[in-house]
Length: 395
Image 1 (cartoon, one colour):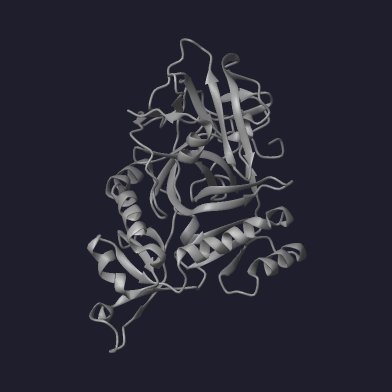
Image 2 (spheres, one colour):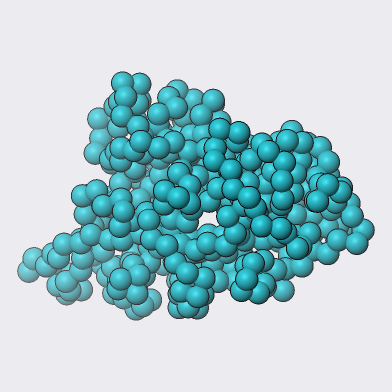
């Protein structure tokens, strides 16, 4: 993006680069005790979700070193399976889950006290909520249907289980306030976080390191294989949407196969045409040695993540929201992105996100930059690989 500050990227020493990223969630709680006419399990004291907006600097700006992220990832490894199991068992009583790093505990929202014991037996901490996840997701879907009428000042919206609400992030102006009032629909599920920043894709229009396609500079994501064993890599769709020859250090090493940058997501596929190119199951951490990708299990809100990009290198943080809809302006609205507290710069688009050794997604865009504690969004890798008809290479 020509209007953004330029950073000289470090040279790439691989033909296939993979990277990681992180985001943060902190919870605010109250304590409630059951009344005497409830069942015995309801006498247990559980925390109650709060609708009070959280301090943005607490929730969004946490940064981790690679060593801190690696240590946390080992502790957080079982979370994905626990969340999946509880979501199935709790059904309509499920109100979302997130990892509280202060307590070092998986928090699970419920709307029915009879499931307190079920959550505790799974090693998680229950929290009573007013709205279930299905209701919150339904409200977000309603706003998604209004997406094309969203002004550029409305940045993004997402379900926030920690506050049991749907958050709309927006600049404060008349068009935004009109949109928000319609989005609320007279209900109390929506809350607003005012901001002065807007989202933008992290592609750099100045040719440079990483890979280039046309005038765009981006970062290579995860190695992937096709049904017949063909070699590919997954990257951001806004990098490949125009098609063309993909260059590395000025030489062809691939051709664009597909590119999606719309409400369906932000993902693209490049066919590797260089016969000498390798497609390993690894993520380049620059100075810390490669990480071998072993799977694609989805990490929950609050889990640690790391990112690698051609411009800003390797950085770590926490996941702060799932299934976010982002308004990049000029009618470019993308659904289903994951929000993180890691920063990124133009040219980092397409680079990989990993939690521990589990592939999470490829960088889409962000708010701010690495000089101003930016936020970054990624396209979940499982959805991208499924729609592209390929499999992420693992070791």
